[in-house]
Image (cartoon, rainbow, N blue to C red; front, side):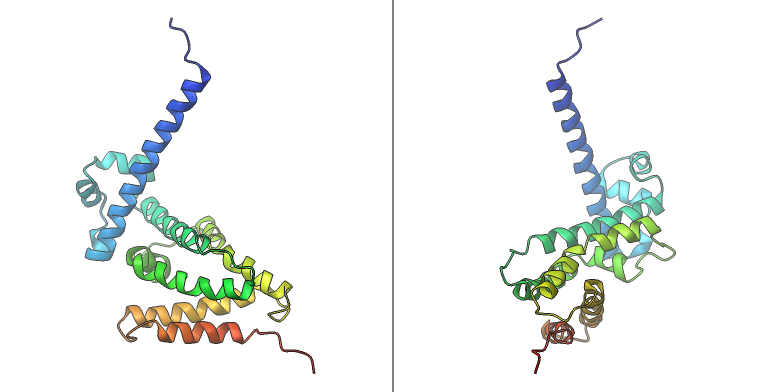
Length: 209
């Protein structure tokens, strides 16, 4: 019986194995996302995804369990990508300035990831309903907006209220403008900027007389 490998080597092997798994998983999600955006939800068959990705259907079933599991993984991946884009917005000492920069970052994320966006917000896959756990994780991915709003409230820049109330108002304004823009009814992001700015201004703290 051979000598067990040092723990350091075992750890390196485990990290390498996990890295390969994550890369493959990301590739499969990217293939599915591209198909959803370019060919519609009917293209999201396990066989089609496997063919495009150059892997076996069994590998997809092993990773995601089912087509529904793949759809939920796409749903969560979309929110995770949105989170990374929002987290990448440079921090500002002025929380209101920071909040104003999150809006354009959110729009950019939506327009650059149309497949993910349609699944996250437009029920692009008929019959797919994310689990309660997935919905909770998805909303948590956008908590940076809540945190920055809380900073604005603490600084006296916004009226004292629940940060989620402000965030949901801002979210509704952003989604409405984005839906119209994506459908071709708005030529650019000017309306998006106007309505999201107005949503924030509705909660501006007014100086006492």
